[in-house]
Image (cartoon, rainbow, N blue to C red; front, side, top):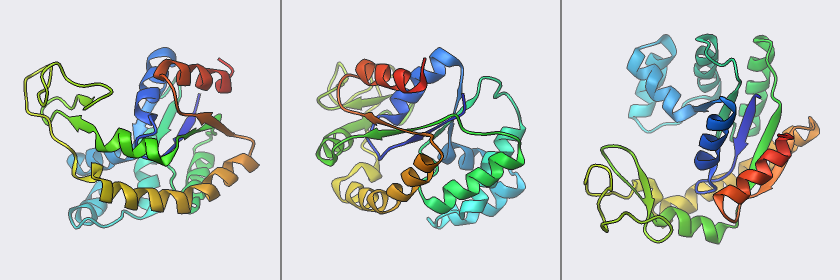
Length: 214
């Protein structure tokens, strides 16, 4: 299966992507991780992206798609891929279409997790993570055994700077503006499945499996 996951910050894309990865062997691809990896490996595209990322500027769509294409060409995607949170704009979706066509690939389904904004604020602003191992907690929904410290290595937990209410408000405004066009683009291709993203992770995953016919 070749999939795209759409959804705002806090919608649960990462949690559900890991379940799909475990059950079906699809490879989760995060564009943020790919960009950092390309910079670390010193690829041509990574060298172009590095100064932009250092300055906090947006990396151009074609450059991001090029880095995704680099990853595809490295192989290891025999069971398919899951693009997590990309594309986020219509030009990105169109650029992704062109790249997939160039490589003789196609999408099987685009999953959009639908979650009310008030719930997103609760999920995101309560999120804490371990700076050492990356484990993510939530102050009320999934707290650590000892408040403020990681269960695994005892490190003091931190709140990511972009998990503040102000930053989340800005991210959601951009998402609200751009994502309807992306959804329409995939709906016209018969690929879009909207998933009610409220409830237990297991219940939401069951709805995703139904949408995939699995």
